[in-house]
Structures are given as C-alpha cells and as structure tokens.
Amino acid sequence: MGSGQTPVKKYNEYLRDLIVNGKANPGKIVSHPIHIDQAPDAYDKFDSAG
Image (cartoon, rainbow, N blue to C red; front, side, top):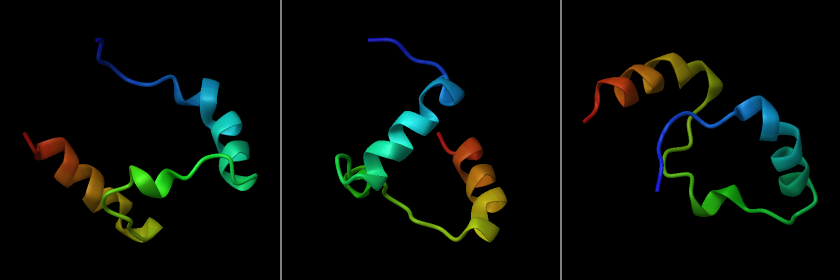
C-alpha cells in the first residue's frame, strides 16, 4: 500500500463521466457533504486533524 496525493488532473474528467453516467456512486465514500462556500474551512479542519 502506498500513500500520497492523487494525480487529480489525470482522473477528474474520467471519474466525472462515470458519475454522470450512473456507473459510479461517490455517495458511498463521501462522509461530509458541504456547500462550496464551506470548502476553505473544511480544508483547514482536515489539514489540522490527526
């Protein structure tokens, strides 16, 4: 097992298309849905956790 940042730009359009076409359901792994305006605070909380 490895760790690190995901190369988001490599996969974002492919994953978006899977979601749009109903072939992927990110709701199974999304634990804290937030409004886009809350993103900066959510990132700060995530970064300071652990």
